[in-house]
Length: 107
Length: 119
Image (tube, each protein chain N blue to C red):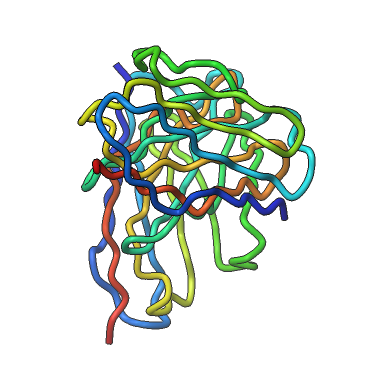
């Protein structure tokens, strides 16, 4: 199985700040990576697919980058509605696997 | 408008079989490239992919659950199903169904159904 290691596990940031979340795969996943946002009490929502493509309706302050085994999600100008948990997921190989998640809070 | 909704028993006893239904609208599981998957999340924890069923009836399972999983679909009634045998307290979680189409990522998710395993 491909292991997805996400960091940090939790993060506290101020409004307007830029935040970066990292995801490392145990082997090359060829950009077959998605990022999801999960707000408390809600189901996950797709943010980014294919490592750097923005899903429909997602604000442009969200962006994804990376290749090979290293990927990142960046949130520019943090807004209060961005408080959530974020998960990466690889779909290069079965079984599809998720990162452990990053809980983002406001400072 | 794509929607998915999970339904299940809510609570069951150890060793019982869990049967979940995903009822969806806004797409057809007979469409080329369409897929419905099941994912679960234990309280406050991460996400675990369980199984996928594709438009052509191809099925994929998470080997960590060995032979406990069975996924199926009823295309005519826009439903997908998941059965998990020999349930244990460790299987207590919120179970989600979600769709993939044109790419192997989940673009629409259901609201989830909480399943508690307790004696």
